[in-house]
Amino acid sequence: MEEWFTKVYGRMGSFPKKQKLNGGAEYRMEPKLVKSKFIGSLLGTFVGDALGMPVEGYSATMIARIYGVLNEIVHGGWNRPGCYTDDTQMMIGVAESLVKCKRFDGNDLANRFVDNFDMTRGYGPGTMRVIMKLSEGYPWDKAGAELFDGGSYGNGAAMRIAPIGVFYHDESEQLRDVAYRASMITHAHLLGMEGGAIQAYAIARAVRTPAGILDREHFLNSLRAFILDDVDIYHEKINRIQDLLEKNPTSHEVVDALGNNITSFDSVPTAIYSFLAHHASFEEAVVYAVNLGGDTDTIGAMTGAISGAYHGYENIPTRWLEKLENGTKGRDYIISLAEQLYKIWSSGNTTGKW
Image (cartoon, rainbow, N blue to C red):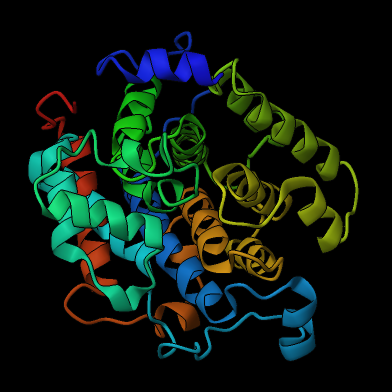
């Protein structure tokens, strides 16, 4: 796999592709519902991030001992209730760039990451190093590759991918290309980029599926068809998700099978499982994800992005929305970005989208 990645990565414009996906049944939805899903995915990222932030790094046992079940946005050790972390901060940058350029633009997105950088949001050391390189003029498509001698396979690309998932929800091939390019700015390892693409595709499938008619087996099969054949670890995790959905596993069994840490392959599948196991309720899915412990803000954010794309904005609990920070780039600003993304997508005014 590493040899394959090196060969592919060296040629911009030659990112891996799968066959064109027909995705099974498609459903015609009212425009206002699709718009709600755009907003729901971006706000879902924010909500999951804010709910999980106070217990980041805690085990499921520790969370249960302190909170019983953490289902409210509470004070975090380093910030007030309802604040977002780097997860949402970087997602805002992705949305801002798509709105401005009406397509993916690597230079613009890298500049957004630099301009929006705020140490108090809890950025990881690897991402901070890349942002420093970008601020010094390093090319957007080279800076991430030098990290960890081949790029990071952390979940930092997947955590911020919601705007790409909704904007390209009807174009699977472009979605993969753009997800890879957006990911590689900071997370250039194959497993990090593929994780970002898988998360984006899960969001896209959720947008395309009206709430209440989800077929979990079809959802998983569509993910299998999307994931690169060479990337065995993600295929194995999808198989484990299917096995878990047929049981009533404990949180410890889920963590043992899927993971809950900062690597993309030990967190993206966990978010997908949290959504599928609790797809009837946005709140139940995100609460479940956060209470698994580990990288709670990011797994919560990714679960919220998928679930919000499925249920739409109106099904996010009002009590949570009211607690979200709402300054210059807070809740209302994120809603506005989602509305603008929807307007650009629905008008077809996308300057090629790539």
